[in-house]
Image (tube, rainbow, N blue to C red):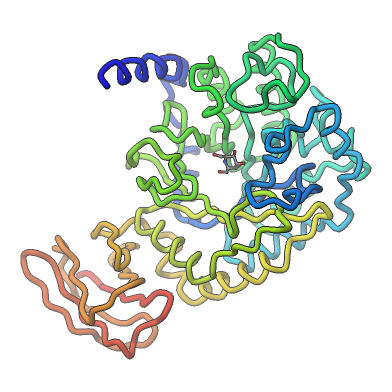
Length: 439
Ligand code: FHN
């Protein structure tokens, strides 16, 4: 056990050494962190040549089909020749995100298959050079985001199943890809940095870079110091986050949790506690896949998604809800329907969500609290009793009212906290919101 711990800490040394140790965020970056926390809710988009296979009739994460079906690069590349998203309408995508109440979009600029969804000059494995569509969808989306006031983030995979210099290989994308058993890791890092430079110089202001893939090989020399310093130099305000499932490394501006509430680990990814000094974000799927999966009908209910979004807010975390567009560029009907229901809920209850931070009472099974200024919002999500005890609530209260109607609620406060009574006939099936106004 002790030896394992020592080995683990040795494996972590490269991260410690190579992250951006002396990083001091600029005033602009700190301001953007505040904006990010206020914004609360974003759309995640997984879209690429893998979308054409739509999961191949299997359950599972459709964007991984190259690896799951062991498709060699030479054959996988054919997908680009029939990736032709003629129905892609960025105005529609952004309008849907806005109607859903989302404030930002995080889209895959490159997923693990290495395919760039933008016009890259350092590779021709990209949408402009290889697809019949031939247009830079990220540029089109960014222009529309600017028009409609939505901030755009790029998801960028550090792991690459296509690039020959991604060598030594990690745990995925191995022999079946057909790459030679040699390569120059430094060249790969330079290539990745060159693509990131393109993304941060040709598309105006970018909200953030959402990294993913370091978990493919923990002991690789990722040279985060170089990459993070470069990003912060090119756009000091852009927020860096990485889905490495560990505590944030120096140079990262927010911390993320995949398909789990902060600090929880039902998916087996999360290996850390919550870093309270940084903004938090939780990402979630609508069914069980990130990329478009034609078979997977295991959609979460809108109730479940709204409750998860609210629970995340109780930890102070943003909610990044995924959407896997079809290869044509259309969003699925299920996605749109779900987003519209959430959007309607936010139209009504947004006051208790946007701009809030985690409330004074830590999250419980029955629900959570959020807070904005002198108002604490109590979100009752799953309570069998008529009263709820908020331990440690010491704030001086001026009133406790129901959100849905101007009705004063009974409460008792003592040194241990407060007990609020919310009659059963005033309960809401999704979230009973109560306003606790402080003096
Ligand atoms: O492997 C990816 C996966 O395809 C997807 O992009 C998710 C999103 O959080 N992240 C990785 C798994 O940790």
